[in-house]
Length: 114
Length: 114
Image (cartoon, rainbow over all chains, first blue to last red; front, side, top):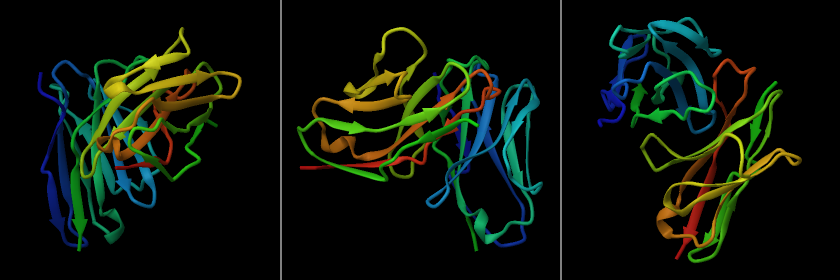
């Protein structure tokens, strides 16, 4: 069974540009969560989607948005990039929203804003 | 509010010695606790979880964790450390009031010296 796939793995963008990151969850998984990881802030929750609906949202500005498609694949978009958006963006999927279910992570997309 | 504390930024252990990575939590309801490991420039890998029942949980790569309700702790342990165990370890928790969202600790860097 294929794991969580994130594309691209590495990305370099210029301040002010926008970027779209993609996440394909494990087959059959319907919940997809996104995290931002930086050395100073650790893992910060961005949002969670389940059955194409946003179920949870973290404390990030409106420049950060996401969506989920009917096949459970998800994308996140960051507009008007800032230097501080440089981070590892992680996607995680789960089969359900049951509390005892672990999340399975992709390898992440390393975004560098210059 | 729910929270997770990993009191040690870094833990240093000699190869072959037992290791412990500490985690304490604060939640309103019954906790569901998880440990993950992250190798450099990779996503997080699930190690083990506590749902209910036996307080000693066994997981991947010889790791185990002990749930202590009175001390609200969930420490990760391994009887004999390997150099390959060197990585970043994260503790996470959710309960019935967290709307499925995982609450993460800041992470502990484990360094195993030969």
